[in-house]
Image (cartoon, rainbow, N blue to C red; front, side, top):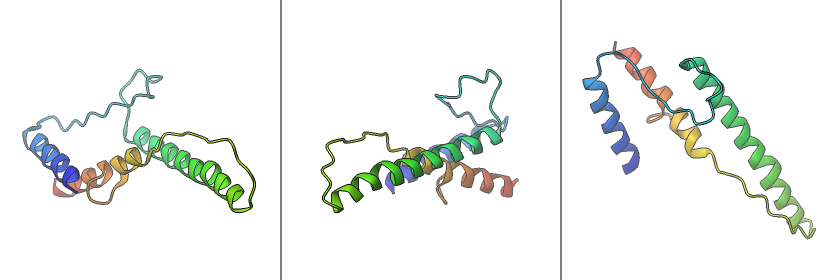
Length: 108
């Protein structure tokens, strides 16, 4: 989409002017590690976010839908943060960080 094109253009512009080969990503919940995170930390975070999405979708959402389909009154609504944008930021095929890293490594 348009937002993806804008972010890709901004990243391409930044990469053109970069000289140190450094990519900075702020990990809001990764503060427990004082040293800079490596690629493996990004992959671990991606797995954790993907598992959280699976859990949210299949446990919370599916359980409530099953109750409703069976006519069970379910007064409880479970609110959870949709983390799909975070997962997409890292793993989208064309605009995700891993895809861009792969493309950049292929060029060099």
